[in-house]
Image (tube, rainbow over all chains, first blue to last red; front, side, top):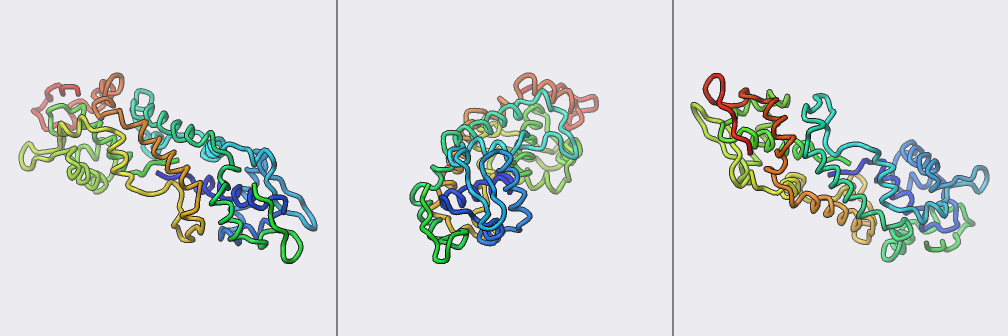
Length: 158
Length: 158
């Protein structure tokens, strides 16, 4: 069972931004740190912006930052937004399944999918960077992602 | 969020066999009815056999049948078996995520995945072909999948 790659990336991006605290993160640097193509990151960042979870500031000293909305956003909500509506099996596919509306499996899988998201609903982005994750992530990124002064300021933890 | 294609196929195969009742289903006919390559079906059937859910009888009048174990099998158990162990995001991937053991997201997603399966645990294969699914499926396959006499015997419903 797999989440979409864009959902995976979105969750990791908000975690990355959550440990940056007030420091702005340069998007290209984030893409490099996370070793993903910049175009993929940009697409995910765009969606996060439209959701109000991330903001960007242009120009010198510009970059990405998690908004307060983003920090307190539910992980379940984010996952639902990025996964979109749809079944966990391919009912429509190349060969649409004829059972479609009469299918108990489809109903059961929808309920199971809902249980998946419901499990994530109470968790926030801020929760994701609690210990030990936040400190480890902070140690990994140090001042490399920030747009702060050389030597970097310690990022305030979420 | 997607289940593996083999999980999807396995669930649909057991449903198909569940409505056949005592009739044996010719594997190639099942593959044709379900419009999947025979090789894919054969692979899934092999796994279902090893799990004890399906049996095959060779020779004239041979074919596939759901075992009693298969009929009463939990859908959650079947899904777990076919999905295997693993995360819903690609922690190991081409670029292994350095957070790995310190990651709260990974833990949260594992719990969510467990909630998904737990939702399916109480459901059996027999439940999946209760009304309206069983009757609709029976209507779709008629006597075409059976190895019975011309004209077919009515398949006893699960």
